[in-house]
Figure 1: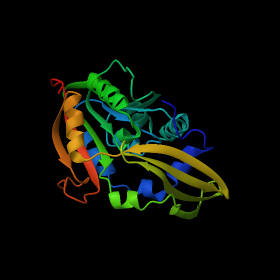
Figure 2: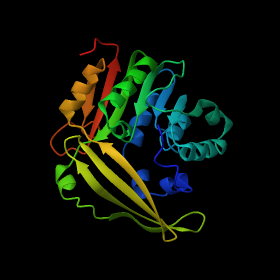
Figure 3: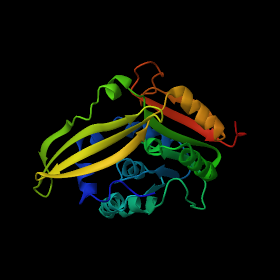
Figure 4: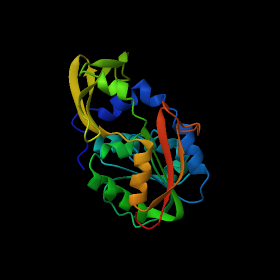
Length: 260
């Protein structure tokens, strides 16, 4: 799976400089889930280590995979700066999340920050879930999140750039400003074709990607079809209920059930 990140120079640094990512409310949730299990944790889409490093610091043994070489390089550089005990608890590898084999089973696998939504076809979704099932220990939990779609925002997107990161200074002295836009909505596929536009010292870099959105009922069906049992679904990372307008769909599931 080709990463959409690696064509932008210093992307790991840029990613870590976006306040929206640093302010996400999922960190405490995933760290608490990791601390609650006995055994290693597998993180799908570990990126620059936003969640992986806090899990390791909290005493968890964690393996992270990602397809972006730039993101992994930055994550490894952060690990080098950590004490030896923390470095010993964490490892990161480059893999396509749809099909990999770590020859290990994990009591907890997490796919934070909408990882599943980057898989826009049914075939890729089912391949991914089958790979997750192969790596789950008996009674192990698979936890992931997607956004709860706001159709008013999709309808009114209009392809206009909207700034989400005002100009700020990077650690190396350059300036960064970022905007996003929804270039196109494929309603029948439930896919938005989006762009994140990074302005670095005035030079424009575009990260184009697709996001597949889900409703709660569809997630239940997808999990059942892939042989998973839904254990819980929350509307936010405080474990609130799934209601109209909730920001997220946070899913806890386990595998090993007959295919629907």
